[in-house]
Length: 236
Image (cartoon, rainbow, N blue to C red):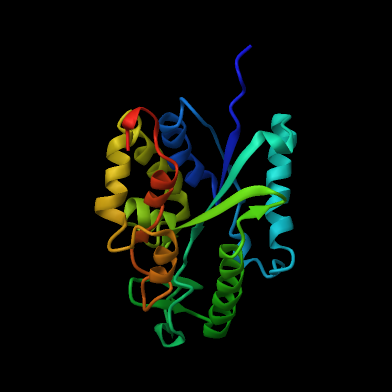
């Protein structure tokens, strides 16, 4: 019987995010890692019941439910990787403006909203949670790392910053079909179309996204994951 490969669990916000990325990552690492994606049905970092004190438990509960479903043990999990939408949370308050027909509308220069105070409070909560998680390396002794999609995954991957929720799955399907079997093109796509000036160093990438209006602009540091986790067969 062959050796069982340990699992890398990616945590994303929605089912369409899983659709867009899971099979691409599985194909890239098919020879040496078991890649699984789990979605949270929302952003736990902007959930008002999430705090710095309980966020690790919240994340581990997601991992625990996955392990229970797959009949895995804790030592079967090699790594937890979480992808966060930045949602413009690091911008100055003056870039949050009143207006629009919806609760929140994003642009690359501002957040337009019906309740400025609510958005400010959300931003403060989310930044506190993400900054805390950036300071940890493990959750319940499992290696943990996090990467960003800015302003959100739809913006990063499809260049659609306010994508209608009814179109998310269709865009995810089309994205997956574009890159499956062409994984090198996916990695190059991130570098040429989405990184957009983000430093290649992990800590530097997070410093960059916190500056000015970068957390509203189209950026990602997901390319760094591939540098930190070299691909088989010299693909990287």
